[in-house]
Image (cartoon, rainbow, N blue to C red):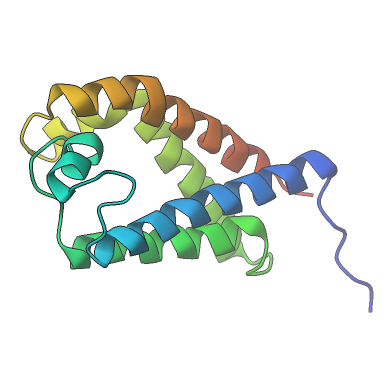
Length: 147
């Protein structure tokens, strides 16, 4: 019985970067689900920065995002093996993060029929969130390549 071939260095790097990126997103959402306002001073300040409103989502929505991001991080990193489900999860994660980076949070709010986000969120979305999503999405796409 032979061991499966390891992925190419670029693919492996994409999987590591993608897994770490999604893992960090998941960890931050765990922190927020506990009620922390980190890295802001207050919950309303955090809400204006990351949601675009005056109120943060409760622990359940934050927890759902945390679990999803952490599970996706495990899948894309290669820690969950190389099944068809894992390969599909890699492609879906890349597509979702690239779509978020391309469309932006303001469009997502409109599509989800959420209130229009404020200026703080709009500025951070344009300068930070969208570029980070695009970079993470590219890493995920590279990591989704087959051997």
